[in-house]
Image 1 (cartoon, one colour):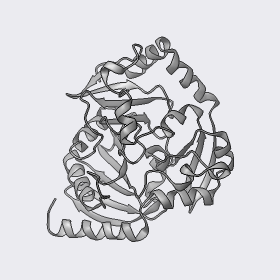
Image 2: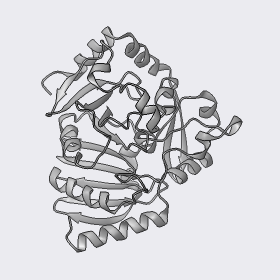
Image 3: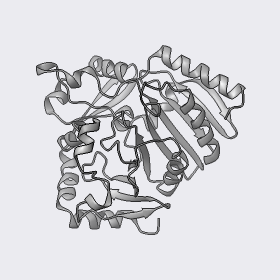
Image 4: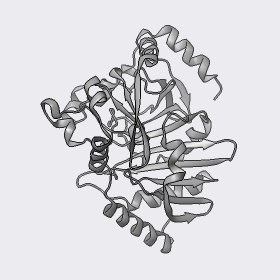
Length: 316
């Protein structure tokens, strides 16, 4: 990037009261750890994220509200940095990370990962101090009507460090890219590649192998992307999804829990905006949430078989 991102961020925080207040509040955010089937999760009580967790994303609600990622609707304090040909980087005013950005398409297009993996890999190389991520339109995106990625401080999510310990096996290779499956509750897939082209091709194979819900245009998923300048390798972590929100989100009374899992949650930093939910969440409760929103072992096995078929047929 031509401009120093840290200096730009400091200027934004100096000029934008809402963002300054919410970033300052991160110092008071409480966290605690839980272990689920040998995997570490951190719970974060972050009241500011209630805006995202409780966002109405049904078609009627989207139609009635102004898109907060379109240029004409941005707060006057929110500045933009152009990236690639048709993206802009924005400071996210409701942060989870010490540094949290949204990278939005300048055009008002639906949130889709199909056809954008090359962009995500390019952006991760341009922003090597950050982990890039994608939330599908039914997987935690609070703006499912406007294409965007996000970026947060690298190393913040536990899975970034722990995924190699959970590798269950190798699902396939393409060129200098390798696809692994993880043997744990999230049933995630990991692509490691020395080239962006091979990573993109192997992701496309996985993309075409995932189940597609009736009436939807692409498989449900969350994606993390990281580029390591030291090794010159990309790492993609893909979380296929079965559901957008767990049953407890819609429950009433004491049974309700305002959790709406997206990339960061599945990455091991579980965001709970309501203090009661933060206090009462247990390892068994978190396991139930993951079992609801992620694919089952049987569904993941079916995905693996479809990947094998595509690779053998060299349809990638």
